[in-house]
Length: 50
Image 1 (cartoon, rainbow, N blue to C red):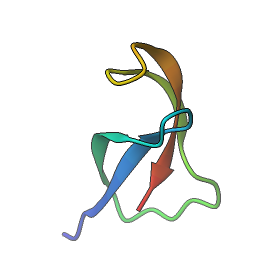
Image 2 (cartoon, helix red, strand yellow):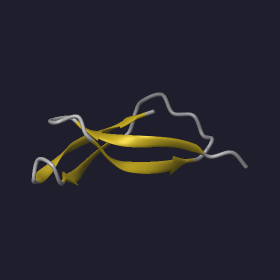
Image 3 (cartoon, rainbow, N blue to C red):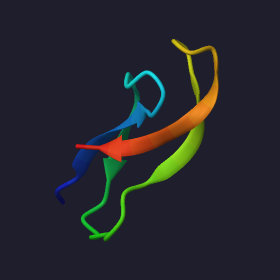
Image 4 (tube, rainbow, N blue to C red):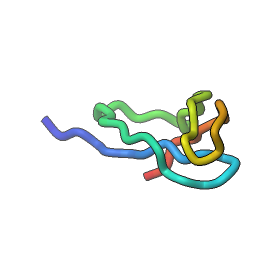
């Protein structure tokens, strides 16, 4: 079964800190999660990128 890879990028500094293995389900909007950014040193909003 094919898995799609994507990354979560910090909206403040733009660094890609987290990677995800997504299923084959299609979504219309991209995932947005508050995660810790080690470069900013605080919890920021991270958006899904390809």
